[in-house]
Image (cartoon, rainbow, N blue to C red):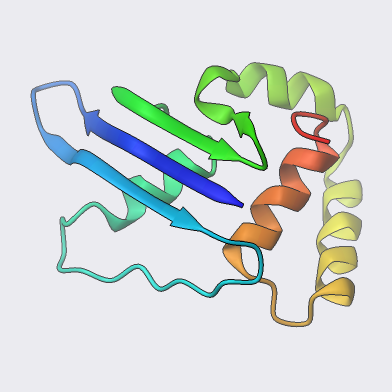
Length: 116
């Protein structure tokens, strides 16, 4: 389950990519993110994936607020090499022939020990 609550993202220089965005994705639900160039689609996915941090608001995956977890914490918990990541990706494709973004994200965060 992914819950995005009132997230905003403002980049240095004042560009506001997202303002007060909220959504919820249930397990097994398929979601499409669409919009014009510059609408904030990539920014939203980076925030959900923990690649960037929101200026305000929260991203919760399976009950864990990933907005509070630093990327270095995730990376330090992994301690596995690229070959292991390739194996992990092949494994998720084996379980889910057409994995959704939520399945991939949950698998990534479970593998890294951020959520259980």
